[in-house]
Length: 336
Image (cartoon, helix red, strand yellow):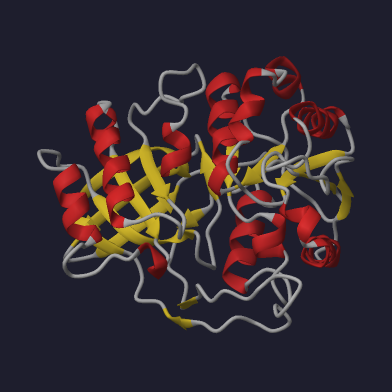
């Protein structure tokens, strides 16, 4: 089920399903809103999106009310999260999936928000989008980084096949404290691009999520099917080689690697601490031993910038060979 494409003048609704960072960094939130307005959109914010109740952005009912309001409002064409956090999966039991199905619209975020994206996709078959959030990406000094901007436009504003996904020229992981010293562009470094761990060919629908967040859904009715999927996984800078190893081992032991057609790993922040002694490559080789699907890493999504927008449920193909390199293509449109 494809949502309608975004057009200039459309209204975008902003919600905080998880962390209360918008409460602490109002200037960064406002800059993200201004970036959307400068792109030609109207913006409304959820009544509780700037709220804090302990470690969450308002109570469970507050967050549900904001989300359902944006779904129900006919003027809202897309819903974008302010940021991730830890607890968006609390909403999954209480969401009105019939309402979501009868009012299909773009829903986007990343990190912890992928619990909602995966759960909604599993329950309704609506295409959902792992992509930029309001504060981390739209709130950048000067707005979205060009590479992220072009992916946003190509994926959400055009009803033609998305096509080939190339790597960005540069990337950044520099941290600038929000509302304190984030008043300049972040420093970037050249991007060496996606890399092949295991060659091969794959074709299937995309399923994109944060590793630890997706595994929260194990044993619940909100875990999507993995059958034939090109699985795109990322995680944040608070993780370590040991925890990433634990996650990919769980994917293996759940039988998920028996089902997927390909695996793409997003670029990790250097704080995760991979090195020659404790390498991502060796970890992934061990977790995928005995499987012959292609495995790619250092793709432009995750907790570094810029990032591509990945639509859950949209058909894609992946060819990874030493002769031709990496050809990752999204074969259809994600919107109508």
